[in-house]
Length: 250
Image (cartoon, rainbow, N blue to C red; front, side, top):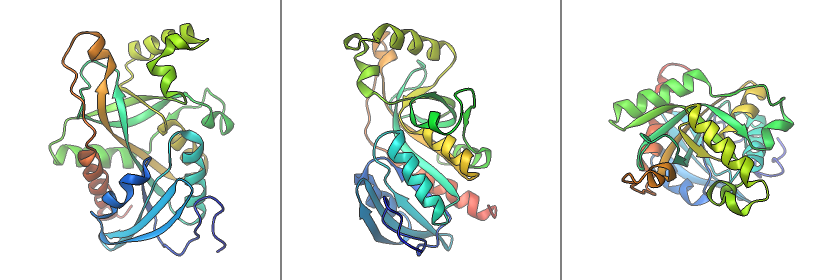
């Protein structure tokens, strides 16, 4: 088939599974844990490697930051034959028991971003695929990682979260932030709402596993607030989840 305009390749990869980090710098590191890893393609923010798990081809492709580039990547990968997507990313904790270094497996996402609104009305929920989510939670438990499952918050503005006082709509941002916390939101990130809505619209499967980098609410409360930038646990969890899905014939 003709190469996709943004990701730059067609269906020659023959992969049904894709691992999606945001950062292009993580792609090779993730692919190194697959069998027979090799560089596949690079265009714009989309760096792609190809490998195997349990004899099945698996892509690892970066999406860049935010919903728009994630949605484009998923749309085009789906056209090339990918049907299962796992985002491996980072987040900031919101609940006080979500500590730096913990994993968060998202069951759904708050749609406080713009991309998903161009797919479905805002009343439609952004929900992860159940089989993929269960595989991620099972893999995390088997690896002995501290893992929280629940709803995450997605936004478009990193600094709107971290410096709302600078924003003309700062009062609204602070009010909604507290509302999400009171509702039980576990952590904040930028891509899962778009990923889940696009996957639902395309009738494919998607899940998310996140490394908690820090928790600004713990810092605000005067609690210990460890910080980590090591995504190894989330990466291993995603890979083992794909193994579970392949072995289950799904």
